[in-house]
Image 1 (spheres, helix red, strand yellow):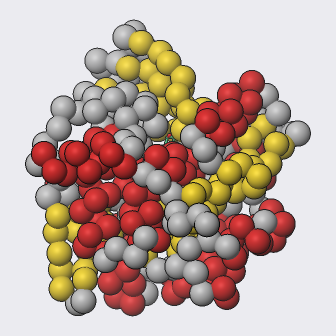
Image 2 (tube, rainbow, N blue to C red):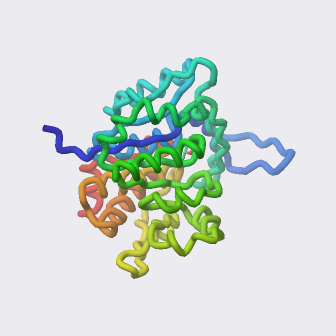
Amino acid sequence: MNNQPKVCVVGSINMDLVIETAKMPQQGETVLGESFATYPGGKGANQAVAAARLGADVRLIGAVGNDPFGKTLMSRLQKEGININGVINDQLLPTGVANIILSDKDNRIIVAPGANSAIVPAVIDKHDLIIRQSHIILLQLEIPLETVLYTVKKAKQYDIPVVVNPAPFQQLPAKLLEYTTYFTPNELEAKAMSNDPLYTSIEEKMIITLGKEGVSFIENGKKQHVESFNVDVKDTTGAGDTFNGAFVTCLAKGLSIAEAVEYANAAAALSITKVGAQEGMPTKEMVEKFIQER
Ligand code: RIB
């Protein structure tokens, strides 16, 4: 009997093309960078890896292209113990890529979604059983918005909690706002969401990650704030993804919101101590040791 929390992630899979540079180029300028490397990424894949390393039984619904990046990413996901039966191998579109410029311990990212656009509602229908058998569903916005909405509606129908990480930000349909259990925006995304006329109706669903300022959320009508940990920052790419993967794993295990936020905050802190979105993502044992030591 498998007692692991069952997490379904519906989202993007990218190859991250990362250049480190001391100087961020301005418009029309060319600068010489220090290094280049490729790392597995994509918000969906990153969040799936974070949850799997923390002990969840993870199923990923996503898509890659029929190309070398796609093959490498699929085998990495498999090595993480993630069930990839829901990942399509699209014959027409290339695997998604993210162009990441790392400078001064921060990043700028442009995503070319490629095969991630092939995750249409029919793909969700095809994997209806994965959705139905999950304890929680986690989505981001690097796949078509109509698919995110479709999945959220399906989860509502099956009475399964859904967390939406609204990144990169897009205006969200009213039904998506209504049916989502929690949103996990960063500060910029939260600010953009606060302009929505329906914002007051979702304020209590907002778990806002504030980078080095910690995390804020509302529990039982009261504003709460959790401070971030002081760590040696190498690369913040994937910190939000680690937070999301950890947060849903904790919720699926039955932890309270405050407990889930505390744990996810610690996992995210560890993730930024290495370069590459998935490289620093911790295991369950690492997070427990870190929390004990602090
Ligand atoms: O959240 C970080 C991720 O955003 C990167 O891995 C990149 O692929 C983009 O999707």
